[in-house]
Length: 221
Image (cartoon, rainbow, N blue to C red; front, side, top):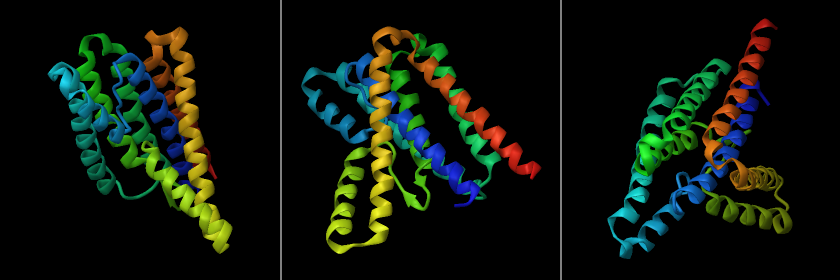
């Protein structure tokens, strides 16, 4: 596997963990809001229609932000088509800026600002980091991944397809990573509910530093 593929794999798994983490925090802290799992967000939007605008607007804001983030991220990917550790570092730097911004001003932007920004952030992240090795993976919406996992397992067991085993293994790793993000967020929320976004931003800094170090080592060889 090429270095750029390894970097993309590592960053995709990191972002998968982060999506589970952020969705859980949003759900616990903002009355069942979801920022990356838009299927669930739309279900909650519909379920809250009877409760009035105040209950559905955060879900609308999250969905609108997600659409905008995915759209702009695709433009960014197209204009930076060449894979490199420097490009990935820039993408993670954008992630860090957004997370630290939300962590610093969360009380000021309120639920609507949080929903728009984190919805856009999720759309951006899922569009930019979505590949493990050569396998595309939706690292924020697990319904399709679980369905694909089971169909690939069928092909492994009954059709003896080697490629299907590789795909099913990748998806299983992705689902497990997402669940790890969920449990980590839920456990941290018990004692650190006011610092959840700062923790996410700090973890992104660690990922950024590791990426820069790897990039420098490669350039020196």
